[in-house]
Length: 379
Ligand code: FES
Image 1 (cartoon, protein in one colour):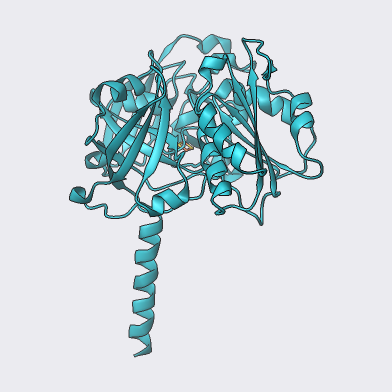
Image 2 (cartoon, protein in one colour):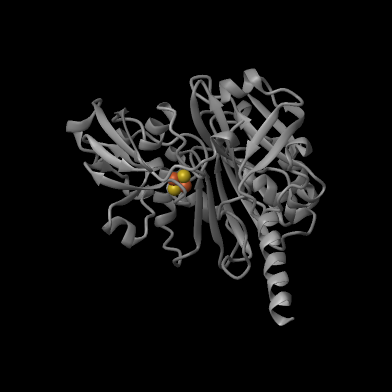
């Protein structure tokens, strides 16, 4: 009797865990909102025909990893859910993205995604969310470009009472026209004293806006008195600049959280990149289960991109060295891993494991990749 009861409880927990953290969510586009010619929001709802009846709940600030099959490549892209957790309970996620005309993914999306299109995504993931036990109740958010989206979700969750925290957003854009969701975010800030928005323009001097970059002086100027946590979300170049400024604030350990949003930097931008490897192509031997495949790996592209280009279904989620979904074993050869993005555990580094999304080939190499059987779970 007792055994049956315990088995039923375990089964219930198993189903609950699956509902909260599904590996795959089948979605479809309900609506597309244009924000000028180069940015769009996609309203996503469950695709009940494909078996997803409910959206997974998430913490404001988390992302879903979209899985796309483009010209023979299986690629992923993490996009923060910019709507609120309450909206997810009502059956809706919203993701917002900017068109990168020279990119691989957004031009495909601009051309192929319409109302009714099926979209495949992971469950929600990521650590860029407010956790009262871990974080200070005053959050200073440093955002660049489309990195504003997780903070848009947090601002909405503060407004509707899901989160009890204060959020000061320092949002860097090149020009006034480049500000994404600026009016919408200001509307939220106008309704609650707990959300403040400061726009900083790097390429334009406009009355009422800060001019330049997000420096430590600006952080000090707008950060609330007392203790605060810093959350950073933006492209790699902005992140590297912001981290140097934040380091000079000498905050206590654990007070800074970050997630990349946008393209990784070129490995050539790092001072310790070995110049001899620059612009070379290397031979990458990939071991997947019982198969051996040899592909090309360019010096300026991550090992993950090389795998994707070759049509290998390599696992990935965050694409910024944080989640370890792409963890693979380097059997031989050498890879360059920028120190800023090397978040491996000490044991992984010691036993030759690396995260392919932030590792770049600097010699011929052999890699053991834990491929998943989910080629059918790409849209
Ligand atoms: S995809 Fe997250 S660490 Fe590589």
